[in-house]
Image 1 (cartoon, rainbow, N blue to C red):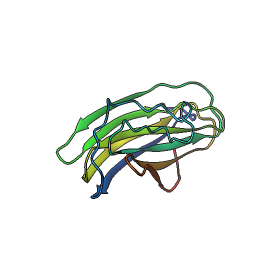
Image 2 (image 1 turned 90 degrees about the horizontal axis):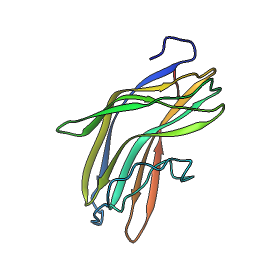
Image 3 (image 1 turned 120 degrees about the vertical axis):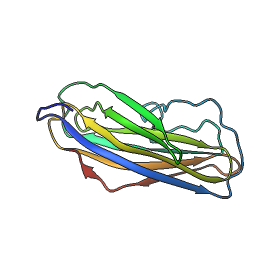
Image 4 (image 1 turned 90 degrees about the vertical axis):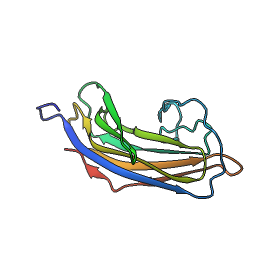
Length: 160
């Protein structure tokens, strides 16, 4: 966390449950890093590796005016109830730009209930010379006979 007027920080946590009782089984291929919204417009930066469904969650982050560049880092932990990510995400933004920042992703290969979460993750925008805002998103993408991609968006909030 930078000690200057151009740093915006929010601490975020979430517990996400996907109930998929009628999911048709399908094995996922190799895990793929998200390609990002720039490479795949309209994708929310999420990607499905062929599994029956993919659950992805993160934030849409925007800054009024970017003053400089960016850095990044993230650490994770596995708990008995759900995989949990804790860490820091620094988001580079240009003036008026919005980025999709993916925090967690999990393949669902058969019907069931799936859990993911993150706890006290620092969402930081450095060198932001104006107002910064974020909004949570969670996306579920299914494969099979009927392809669906459904996104749920949280209420926007101010960062810093």
